[in-house]
Amino acid sequence: MAAATGDPGLSKLQFAPFSSALDVGFWHELTQKKLNEYRLDEAPKDIKGYYYNGDSAGLPARLTLEFSAFDICKI
Image (cartoon, rainbow, N blue to C red):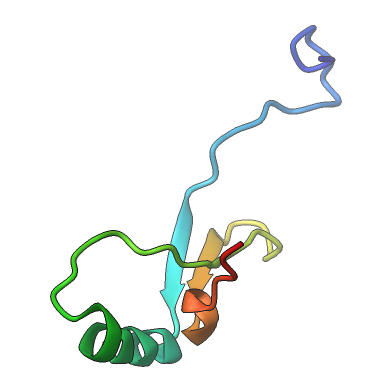
């Protein structure tokens, strides 16, 4: 709330563009899933990725997809 009242010590929340990093293992796992499980099914699939925003100033945040992206626990 202090940023809304003009407190110079706090900055406004802003969108930070990110770059994506697709691991080689992700492509291999996607290929296996498409050939053996999904086949011609084009329905959206749930996957998980990792968002990291801890790099040095000036570097974009990253969204990383690895081979484990398809390991989703269904409850």
